[in-house]
Image (tube, rainbow, N blue to C red; front, side):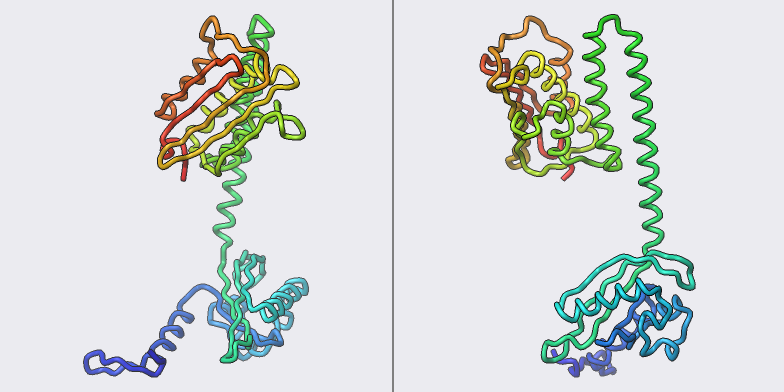
Length: 332
């Protein structure tokens, strides 16, 4: 339908081209966002009321002026000059974020410059919109501050617990096992605080927990699997289980000699998730004579993930299979 087409609304004939123009005019006048346009010489050829108010200028004072002439700091004006030239040269939008001192004080603005094409497909002007994101940035900075403070306090608390344990345990071996588990717990908590206690990438989690057992070449522990976000409630449990498997492998299994290795692989199929820990190249594995705390902790994952956990002490190496519904373990 052409711009000059008309529709009959009762007794009123509305020309669509004029209606669209009035609609745009009303939106531009009412929006708190800053809307503007530059010519190819970087001069303002349009600025809505919100932008004029932010500048503290009338349209007659602003029209035909460049950013520098309107009081922008030299670095700021030069940055926008370069961006305008790039939009004209490439015909593609540019987006950025910048502070600006206007009538509302120093605020942070998110902006985008877009090309305006003529009938021949050439760029004849550059239009832009800018939004004040200061409040959002302040919330983000406050959240980051709280997250860092929480991370600091958690680390301090775990350090105190570790110091108490050092004085309380009767044997060095018992303290060593406890300290390893405490470090695994700290790793899980550290990952969660870095992500504001939302979810963590499974690959990052596995790498962090097993980092102390990995070689510089990365071939001692091979990690494979799709990008999955693990729910916050499952991060700590999985950290502890992987740490137990790695500690056992370092003491008795494939990480106890130079030739052994571990493969940690996970996959999804429909709504099912499966993670497999597989040891190879280590000494001959004998079935354990008793069920230790580590094995109990690993098997407790079945309850945590509402799935099943199989721990198999095969002669060629330990294999642990964790299965669960994808919805239970993954954030998305």
